[in-house]
Length: 299
Image (cartoon, rainbow, N blue to C red; front, side, top):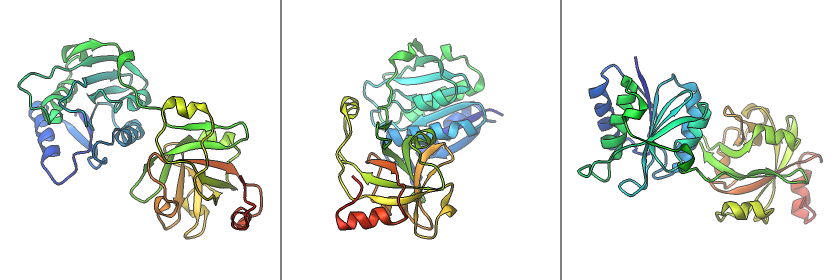
């Protein structure tokens, strides 16, 4: 049985997903299609890329079809990639790159033909799904498109994750899951390098919310933009009491924030793209918050 995973922002209210399934099954009737999600926020390439990259390692070897494509019908290229651990098909907008790296790296890439009569707004059905089916059936990559240098592919903007000389982690929100848990761009290893290990405590402080270019990010620390929050460094949600916040390393190996029996994104007023700092707190529990209230808080 041939496996094709399918990730989109198509939603579930319309027939878009079913149409793509139908195209695949007409070519490969015995294909097993694994729907990763079709609830990526519309046009949110970064969220789609993160979900795909964090899922492919748990899937059977096969073809990974992903369509989050705000540039559909424009000059953006359509791609098929061969990675060490499988094939990927989708738009050339950065959506596939992190997943390909999780699968061992890109070995070869081709651009796909978009014929003149092809409708401009549904390449998932008319361009990507047929190629995913062909690859699942065993068609060699070089027969579905024209070779292109992997170095020319659109790369996603690197998310902010760095350790300041003073031991502070500066990072940003990558995604918020269904439970309101907040995944950060900082890895668990970066937390460890900052001394943020359980059972410890940390101080979180939001930074300015506007998006910055890579050059601006590299220029130096960002200014604080809000009050700090003291929280525990734990292993899981149960490391703290009900309603308490915890910093932990999630199942993808990334730093994350949660509130036990609650919604961390709401409680901490965080959303994807927001930047923040985390630093170890060696004082008594609650002391940082009390000092902030009195005007003598941690800088």
